[in-house]
Image (tube, rainbow, N blue to C red; front, side, top):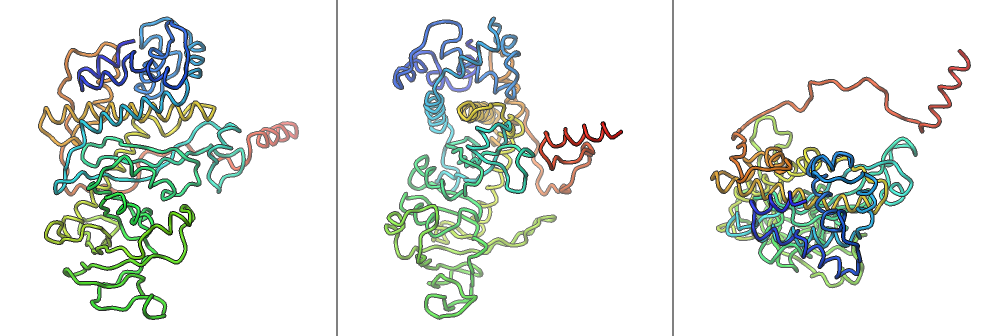
Length: 445
């Protein structure tokens, strides 16, 4: 079971130590886990789990063929269940930190840029998973599947996943956004959509020494007229809550955001009391001229106040890089297979999630090394090509030339699909009720 170590040695020699036998056993002893030596010990079980996810969470019965070892699916399943969740968390955290140290470099004005966004994935319909994660409110009981909420932090330049948090479906992104801040360091730039744009969150970013470039929230009123009034000074509706400070250019201004009267639901009153009364920010309107774009203009808010260091056009180009995270999440969920997990218990689902994060970064590191050797940007390297190179049980002796995706500036595609889906109706009643209905129809006939 040395397949993964062999591949890691070709990508980053120092990463081999994060998943070798002494490291895994040291983590086991640190959390007080005891095991018996054998084929399915912690080291082999973890590597089999990684191998399983590398093959899109393949069936357990397929693993003996991939690994070349003899064991039953039942034995592997029990060995995986015996391993504590804390072991997977420790391994994933250490591997992601090591990958980030090697992959994350300043990519914009001497700063590292990270994107934050939320997503979700489903899992089998079991009572335990329903109670832990919940399902969409528009679906009747027995007609849907549990859905977990995923909040991820990614390096914009390399696509490496710095940290990720799993939560129930009905969890707002802002509730756990601050928990991802420790994965960043002072001076980093955080790019996100308007779901993350609030006074409290931006104030927490400033306290952590971070810079932000967010799309303005739809409820925030923005007025670029110089010396305009604000709602705090003049009673009236339809006025901005921020105070105008100075004009930097057309649709580019410095303002002071005023602290709201009450804290958001995701923050305690003690935390809210420690926030400053005002924060100085920059508001910029960016016009979108790309043909076929649904949005014609975007208003951004940023803590980067110097127009000489960060012109408005650069802020607009920086925010447009946020879309790369949507592509990366597609690779994680669709290409790698996180979109639908197989675990039927909360513990197994959490373990699967941790291994998916680790494997995703393993593929990204493969693409990153290939990009640097082939002298192209990491986003040009095909994710699926890097994944396929990691999959064979007997890889080549060296990293091959991986597929480089062509550059397609100004590419426009219609937002529709050609292939038709199966013409089956959606399940709108529990399966037991549908079975009874079919029996009644059969008896009546």
